Length: 346
Image (cartoon, rainbow, N blue to C red; front, side, top):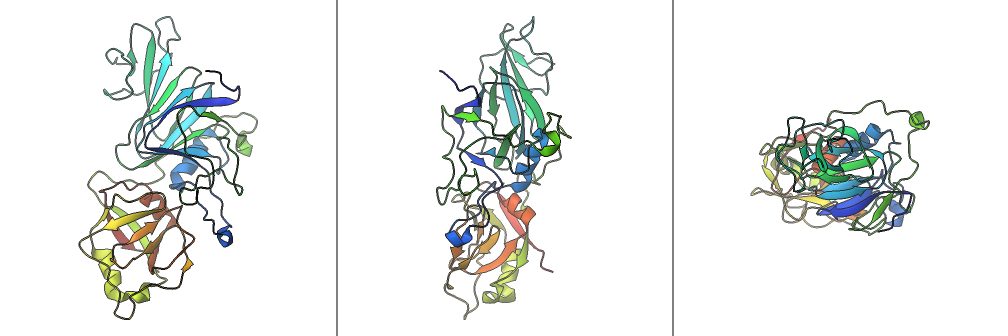
């Protein structure tokens, strides 16, 4: 199919959900518009750093992997967030049909290519016609025209960020290229057949074309091993008086589980233990402003952690607010993950 010269990728598959996200559109709450932006800000920033972009350049945010892109021209990319493997399928380019620099071993996983057995060099090849390379997250690497990039499902955690040198282009809404799933503002979710172009969001230090300062980073967001609870640091208030010390202690002591009805708006938590209000603290409040990380307690006593696409206002009491780092960690919760709260009130 014909492609535009400026396009860098064609979307072949999106996985469960793939969105463009940047640093968001803060400052519009008076218009009823939340800031939105990347759910895991630390991982998003790390992806842009790895390719030498400005901190707020637009990247692709994925849920549970599954993204597959056809590369239309050479590009420097990086994937961060939940630990996963990025597979690059490449047409033969050498005398033996193999690229010059194989990387990590495939360990039997990855996209279906009809290829033969895995070699010690870490790639799978079929009679010199194709090669498949496996790249870990939190590293940058180069892809070439004709390659196919496939993001595998994360080992743990939920969201990944794919950044490309110069950032992704899209028409901004209120100054942002982020997709807000609650309001519908911003570009539509990625779909099969879309052509993705780059912007000009290279960091000033690399504007002359210099290489980024790092080609790998430590994971920006801590994601515990499977079965271990994710610990979220919470500051008490502003409506903790509705629950008293007993309600606060119930929040901290209860073993919480991530519910299936969770998304970019918020994470619903479940437990046999409810956070009960005081006798004179039950009922709704007049609507008041909400922020990312607000821990709202509805009448059933099962808290909701608001994420980046949260509503601007809410009527249920907010017993506490997560720290910024814990908002990032909460964005990596998948259904069934255990959660514990840690008091960080000063």
